[in-house]
Length: 115
Image (tube, rainbow, N blue to C red):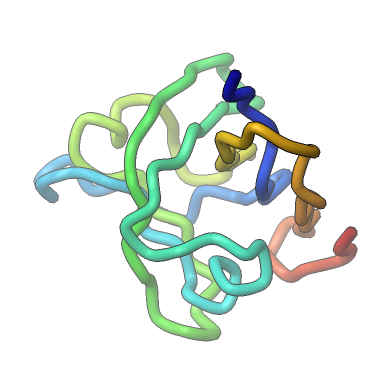
């Protein structure tokens, strides 16, 4: 039997912009993607702490060091600049749960802790 477990999490990412005209997805600074152990193109689950919205989309790489987190396409209607997000990935396994990577960000999207 396969079970789904948390694989990686970016906690309290601040939305820096929205772009409804983009075809879709979530843009995240590639440094943050790497720090969380996520992969460009990976499916992510995004929970907006401010308004309770939940979406599923995929990651695209933002410029390294930019600290950008941009809701694109239809997702742009699910949040606003300044909103705080939880961004999650999961893994299916028939064995033990993976050691999840969790990074927590400050108000400027700098990593303040990693576990």
